[in-house]
Image 1 (cartoon, rainbow, N blue to C red):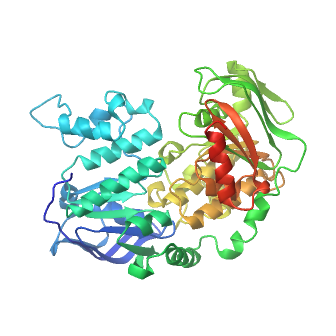
Image 2 (cartoon, helix red, strand yellow; image 1 turned 180 degrees about the vertical axis):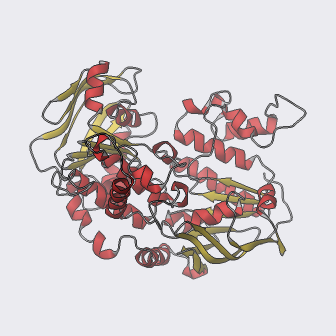
Image 3 (cartoon, helix red, strand yellow; image 1 turned 90 degrees about the vertical axis):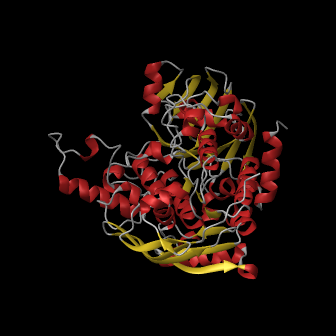
Length: 523
């Protein structure tokens, strides 16, 4: 049980923050009381993450102030009493779980500080007991996220900030996290939860602040705090913030069912088997213009299967791209030939993007001779024009393509990652949890982009490079997302395909989810 403390209120007054031409915070005012969970919602690019990073002392505001119990505190002072769990785990992959837990709390007089009994119990309680001495690079994203959560819980902080903390967690792991949040609030701590999942905000937050364009427009509580009201505020915020409006989203569900009508296959697998046994004897096909989802619980082999399509998991068997001009039987030469025609976007945004580069440089990062002249030279004007074209096509909300990558919201970072992967027009686009930690407005926009990319006649990419995409394969864990974007889904259980579902056969997500769960259980 978390020990009680005399809580401190936190008040934000007139906070401003600008990244180049991008205004992240524009006079933000909000107050949080000790003993409560304050939810934060808003469209992507609204300033949510910038607010959290400012409170954590990771970002210094241009103007405004933060007060704790009525006393103004500098960013360096805030870092001493605040701990944060990021949407993208901020961990050290070359260090063990135990070493990550101790970061920032090492005892200076002890060179090799070891975790104590309470810390060992915490790790065991978080399902990490068997991995205490394992380097994080060998553990899945969910374990990395649980490690960062454990590190935050182990600190004697007064203010706990959770920025999309369960984006890689299972439903059971998420419920355990929320239980811990309530324990922290009950002990007098300040708890702030940023989430795009409306149900979680309504169930677990005492109040929800709606942030739009760097300002807190309204705080919902009591009878006003419903999923419908939060969704309504988000739609209004997305419309004013330049995200996808209702007219863009109309008819998308119907369009998503129209793909894959052709007889030709863009991708075929036969006898596809993971060398370490994660999956075996996979036979599947993806039609031209089709979006196919791969579904399965952690450990089922579904995630490894998607990784193998991009060459990140060793496999043998037959993988045929298009009409068969690129087929692999597992040897290195044929793997390279097939993978060269596959674009991949992983679940961890930090591994897809270069945060030391600008937005434009990231959008062009996968191109090579495509943007060179006949002498192999790169021209700044040509590069800028190409970057601005991609930013416009993918509706990246940034003041300029020269803005730093880290200044963008999570949803806009994801658009950049997908834009960079599709800029080279790979014939197959493979994505792992493409809308993890993305709000409802940007989700719809990403779905539209994926549908447009799958269309062989779709105009997406750089001028002169449009219309070559053939299919999209994605690994997804959310029923609503699969139902919204996919044409078909292959369900993986115990390393094999346990069934195939066609989304046009279902009128609602509930009936689809029931069949998918049954297949995931092996039935």
